[in-house]
Image (cartoon, rainbow, N blue to C red; front, side):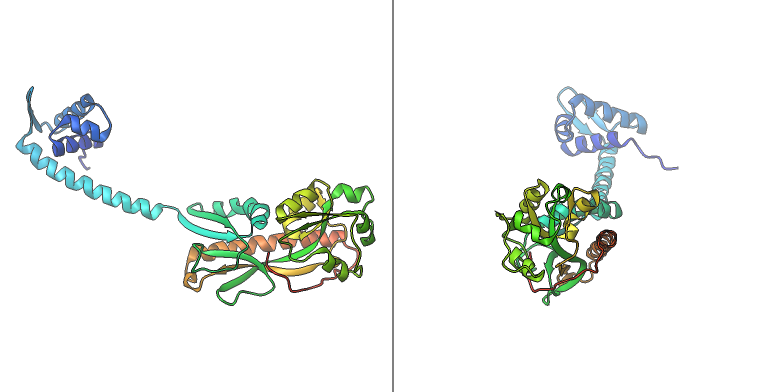
Length: 320
């Protein structure tokens, strides 16, 4: 069985020995002069050996004290180094992820607890952007973007299909305001600057080119357009996966189902230099799982609510 002295007493003695001063040792350890004196006395009692010569005006180490102090300093220094190494190894791994703002707020953040439970030691730092992906110019490990095709300049893995359809508050449909597509002429059409495609394109796709709503609301970001729709202010074209939870809960609805829907994909883009990063691979796999789960929810909703086969219109659009 090891005979190990009280650690607090050893720390107090070592500090006092280095400074040859109880006062300076107390300042270093943020305790009182009396606390240092008591801890040193405790260690001397434990060792049955005097470590200091004390007088009213002088403090000096005994021969045993000098020998013991040299070993104590070396041991505490070594313990400090080893402790720092262990703490560094146990420190959270940081993963920097860039994603579009509305995607981050409406889909990614509500699901992040699942990844945190899976990998509690990983710190995910989220930033929002819709700018083109440039790993050399930005400090992110992964850039999530919506697009029709994988990015050619990096490792680009699709993890979810984006299906864009008209969405509105459930009360508008319940009140009979949207029985057919033609009823859009009596509704406010909500638009936003970052929309993948606008109302004229969708209306043309369903055979109603030239139809316009009773009025139009314009916003800069999709998030505000979605909020307007949630408040019952009109109808907006948005990706189903961003409102899947609201549709399942009955707060929002897609009155025309998948009629005239357009598809593109969301990609997890990583630099080739990060190809062997296991944490990045785990996060990407988690995105694929969550994307599949979201698609299954949308499919279940579609199978329950649609009476006609989905008609999908694919068009080239810019990434949101």
